[in-house]
Length: 281
Image (cartoon, helix red, strand yellow):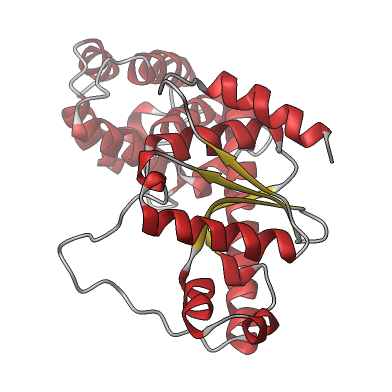
């Protein structure tokens, strides 16, 4: 096979047959002694190869890789010109994101980006490994995975109104912590039990507040908010509400009860109301 036949294989993009010939040191040793052929072959071959619309061909990357390896191998006569080899490598880097190939030409932008990303991941992995080691030295961690195929999770909100008030409070008290349906005993010292009857004590330990706003620096509550409805007109609930009012106010806090009159309050209405309450502190 002469040089023209080799060039014809490039023209028709018969890469497999071309690779077969590149492997043949006897053929290549006869051809590469001709500097004109070598120059034309490099320019023509590499240009056709890297612009080939064969990205979906799973053999395409293999062909590019083979050309690169032939060039690097000491046992093959076939060699590319330096700049042409770089083009093949850069094409491979773009397709495979191979970090080892990128390191061959670290000054090229595409390679530098890939190397920087790789180094960043390596730094993250090293930090994660160090963090894991430190945590293992600091804590005994016992994780229990779910054994149920069914989820029993429920919303932290018991009504749409609770969600609306929370959303509004997140806007008005953006610097604070918001705790929905929080246990009252979280914020009031259990010493209060000595002043309560047994039934009142049980209520204190079991009741929650619809929304508690907590100072982010002191971690002390600043506002207690209850969202009332017609349910709160029931005699038993009225009794409990009265006791909750007493527990909160006698502990030195203010309790705000909100109840819609026409069930048409918007989040903006709640924002306006809470903004006014915030200003009163």
